[in-house]
Image (cartoon, rainbow, N blue to C red; front, side, top):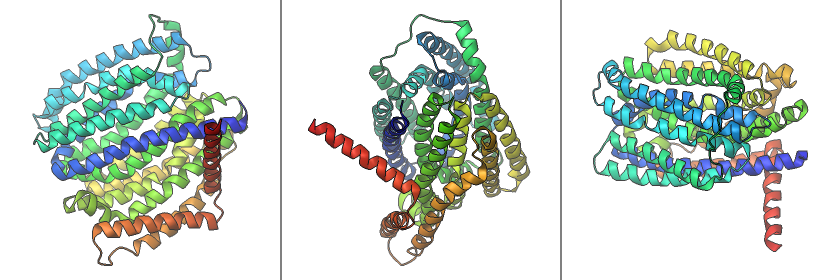
Length: 488
């Protein structure tokens, strides 16, 4: 495929992934605001404790085999069917384990109500196993448009269910039902729209080959998930569910955005880079472009959230959630540098270096664990700052291998994103002056958002920002192509 065609195809699929992520997360965000106004912080703290375990166990269901299907050059029906049946067996085993362990988890936290919640919410693990290979098939064949309808359908339906149950006073069960319905509907729509179906085929030889690549990603993902969720487990044990709720709510808003951008880029970039894995120059060019463009998109939001945090939280969630403001700011600065993490790791995976991927994960989690264990007794806020320090150190670790693999080192990567961060910081400083003029929270927020957006685009034009010009040209050519197709 021609280089320009590859870039255009990648961008169009990324746009569909953006639309899917922002559409779904936009609905989820609105619903979370409604539910946060109805439910208590303790309800969110309770569901967060359970989600920790389902998130960790969900890693086993993929087993790295989904990524292995995407990365393998000549994956066929035998490969896909083998992974499908393997996943189904694993997810049933994992769910049975969680079902049996539920009373012991409840006893550990001294919350008897957790047992039934864990057993019901844990069923999402089985649902995840059913749709896992369908997702890999979509990613490999670059049909990201299908994600849009599946995800949006599940999210809208789950929103209705969650809000109705919350208004009926069902508390934490409204959050449980919302997650169950979302996962089920998402899976059903994917199975209706994706043509691939498992065949009665299985090969231990193929499984061994795929697992040879995938097990390192499994261990890497497990380390990452356990490490990230360990903070919630410690907060839930050493502090209150309210503290955990404020910590999670501070993370929720920036994570909504970062997960949208990261998932969009991650899911498109990995299969595209895998197709180009034998051409280091092309991988370097695309990695560089991914870092630059994603940081251009992320920076104004992260800096913007830092600047408008108090008025944003008061307007969206009411004053009872104001204690989450410091956490929100810490997470925004943490996520600001995530493009470096995402693009570097995708390049390493695409080039088949899952062994190197695992080594990086071990190094990063060693650094993170030292910081976590040394700060956990000093309060939740100190733990949040330790995560920020850990993230800044880990971006250097993630970038280090590509200094040799791609001839694209960390200092070069910083040089590529600093222009975007600089204009975002200037925007954030200017926007912060609008706070405290005596307007209502809503009016203040509208002024800050509109002024910030205009200023960021203006600064991009004045400074002739490369990422802005690239995105503008891609969108312009896409619009022209659409108009030509309509005329034909």
